[in-house]
Length: 315
Image (tube, rainbow, N blue to C red; front, side, top):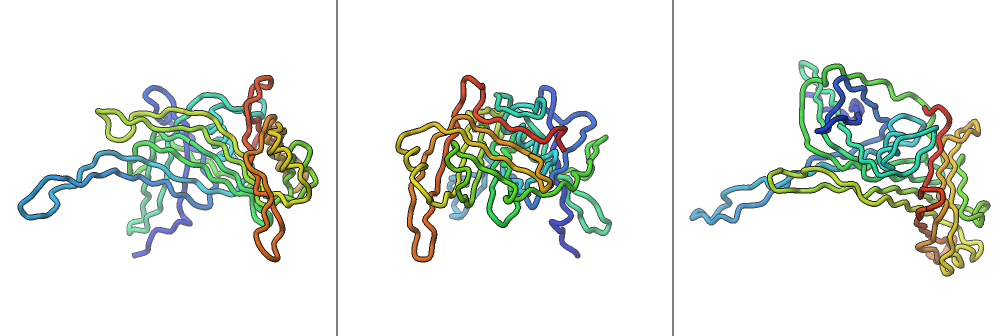
């Protein structure tokens, strides 16, 4: 018998509606472009402490359950990526711009497996009432720009058929974005500097609540929106060090273009402060680098911590 291949897997998401939250009547799924995923259902069990004359374990008790895990992907201009951004930011795109808000969007996440049979069949694994708690983008020289969307999942279910009326549009073939088309500005002091690994992490602090009368999580609560920018800066001068010591506020921007020179995504952080940024000598034959981290702060005048602008008309 042939084993199931990951190369035939499909992962799709759909935003839930109504109260209680559920997929739309005829869901138009957003099919993810992904390089892998690790969304799992993890039951919480407690070994019974009951004494038995046999001297052996009497029972294993199911006391809870959680679903969580990453969706890994290469960054391109496609619907799933922009939906992850909207979910983590807690807001919808407006005029091709996105800023943080306080909405908690819930999704059904569906994994479809191609079972070899015979007869060949499909198995649908669904995680209802799921939220996206974090999105991390990693820009590494010589590699595609990569992303990880972290799912804070809900109840798990397995079915043999698709939800009635489901459609699965193809996710498209927009080119994967690359670091050679990225420009990072940190307060005007690092526009010409050489940067190594750079990352943007957005976290909304979503957590599940466990209550008496419910196995696992009853519902989810959104927390505080936090942005972190990390950059490996090759040491040329002390401007980052002085900014760290002086607790200076700096504006940061990360512009990602395509090969034609058009801006696909622009991330703007109007107020940032260094959290770390001291050069170190790692060893012989190594460049001196500053492994810096900056925290983005809320700008009361502009009304946001971060603004994302996308190429007009989206994917």
